[in-house]
Image (tube, rainbow, N blue to C red; front, side, top):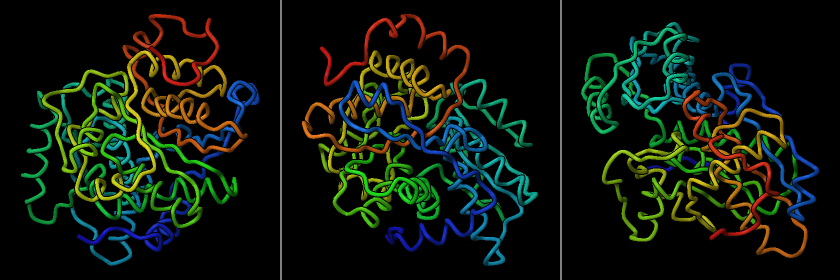
Length: 333
């Protein structure tokens, strides 16, 4: 197994330049004051398709274009953001694309995927969708772009941290959410190369804690069934062999409950004036715990992975108004 390197991230950055947005880094002075640290946010929620996933998908196809090996058809499996990304990337190269997804796919993500011209095939479960895409990938001249377990995808996602660190300069810790681990792996890879002393910390929903279970057991574990979490972008059944190799090197990893996911989604939307997904807001629970552990003022960089939320998810997030309480600092009972 050949893991991607920082040189692969640098190559990816050159390939995708002009094909993806360079997203801004933002912060909230009020949040900084509350936490006692400077928290910087890389706003990939403002990326084309509303998520970082476009970077990995474009890198895969741009590399094939560079090598003269573009396929006649592209297939992918996804819970939403990767589906949109692959559909958009394939449209750049005028390649037909079919997306395999579970019926639980967010309605807004499904509609956006189809708006890029993709055919969307739905299945009862994510596991069935994953099996179907593997079968489709065996067809002649068909390229399967996995959502995370692929060196070129990971390298593409690593450009998020590359761009951010080039803008922010040195930081003390970098945080990213974990679903399949593509963004977190790319973030780890890039941060270790650019800022070897900075901590890299991940977070995932406690209700979809396959990565945490895997890190504890030392082997890749799968969820027993579909995950029930607001952070739908992190509801993957298991991480992959490529991503797990990076996750095992992280400095820390947090499991976040549903209350904190809803809480921080509300607060980040309010403080940053950005439409952020629960999946990326989840990382703030880890940031709050880190803030308590560090008494001296430090600087953290947080990856805001996406901003695609369905109306039904928004209703669940706002069942209780958490803006009446100041931000939670540290672990909550």
